[in-house]
Length: 193
Image (cartoon, rainbow, N blue to C red; front, side):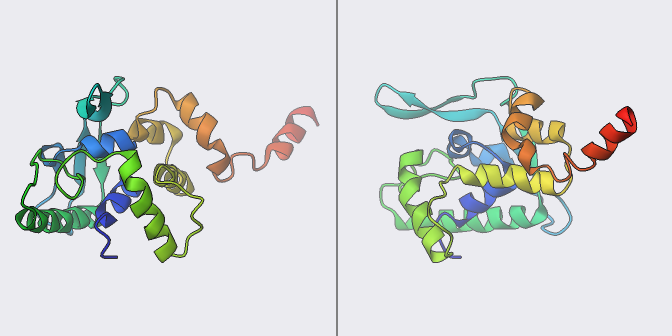
């Protein structure tokens, strides 16, 4: 709690977005409900951070499946409203803020990258007393496993994560689907006697 990147960690675990998609998000991509207790929020994924000749820039996502809308809970919407308020305060305090409208920029408003989030994420893991062999990308995996643990259909998880097919989702996460193999011997026994 109180970590500058707290909203980022919560948002990725709650939406399953890829790092490049998260770091390209602008406030215009987010629909935050006005009633913090009654409505879900929505994020429109259209862009991703891409490597360019002189650093990083915002480009379009690579595939049609990556272009998607993902809903998030009222609790996450509240986190994002708090994050926006904190960010506005940060802008005022920083002399050279580069305003690109990014939701998750660096401390001066520029494009965040995987390299720049690595150390803060490791510090957050240590504070939370979580083994630090986990990487930032594991938050995306957390999203998928939470969805499967709650019985969300693999096709829905595939669409939310922007995978090219449900086969990709199943190849990566089938071991996390509760009861996937349960009762197989009984079924085979009924078929073959």
